[in-house]
Amino acid sequence: MKAVQIVELSGPRDALRVVDVPEPEASHPSTPGQGVVVEVHAAGVSFPEVLQTRGEYQVKPEVPFTPGSEVAGVVRSAPDDARVKPGDRVASFCMLGGWAEVAVAPAHFTFKLPDELEFAQGAGLVLNYHTAYFSLKTRGRLTEGETVLVHGAAGGVGTASLQIARGLGARTIAVVSSDEKERVAREAGADEVVRSDGAWKDQAKEISGGGVDVVIDPVGGDRFTDSLRSLREGGRVIVVGFTGGSIPEVRVNRLLLNNTEVIGAGWGAYVLSKPGLNVEIGEAIDRLIADGSVRPIVGARFPLEQAADALELIDGRGATGKVVLDVVP
Image (cartoon, rainbow, N blue to C red; front, side, top):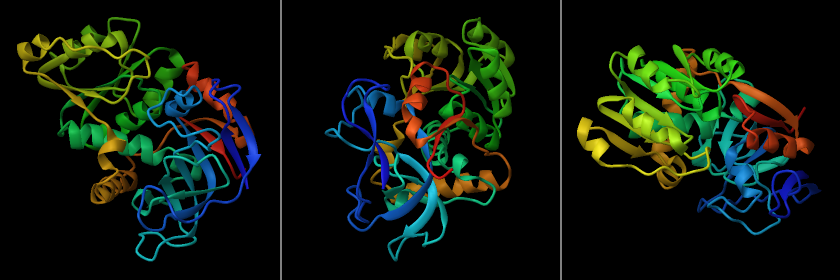
């Protein structure tokens, strides 16, 4: 089968090769039994794959290896006790091996793809939307009527967070850097939009009537302190990632002054050993899909052979929505 592999750690442009490799076996290293074999129609592209091309991600397989953690496609085979069966349309999280014509995912990370969504939308469903729900509800304790500020609001996690928050009854404020990203954030359902190069902290406090309840931050960097300052009493900053490059430090006196919190939301590491939680989050997201709250925003789409272009778009901060590789045109 055809696959894209990282063959050297030289960055997005030079690290990748399109190769012919054997189809994977049904066993999966992350599960003690058999995995779900998926004929891949679309594969998601995310910032971790950019880091993997440089050897900078925490997961460091030996080269060559096939990257790609998110796929959507059709089940070829599945264990008898899986919640999916051959022929089902599914969205799966496979951790590695997704940038190929066939991938294998753990049964507890494989979910039926609702009829309302196409394969390209399914390729951004598990990683982004499970992360958003886990961050907002499981870790952030979001309740109806609260206000959520979302950094990086036009990206994959950002658009997912806007939709999940609104689906849970929250008001949303998107932080973006351009007119195009504002358009995407509003398409994702943002109630208000502020600019990252402007007085967004003060604007957010004014919009929310004194401070927001929750900040979703997948960016990090130098805006983190103002995220803390934008909170109302009892507010929470949810740390999702550091796409901005630098990891901020917290002056804990700021937490004392207004009884605020900084909460880590490491979805993958947390849910890996908790199959039941994966099912719960999947069912919650299915309800939000059914009521129209969740519709993944698909951005740029590339054929499998142009995976390097997809990575460079993300690396250059030019991506909006979910970047997708179309494996089956």
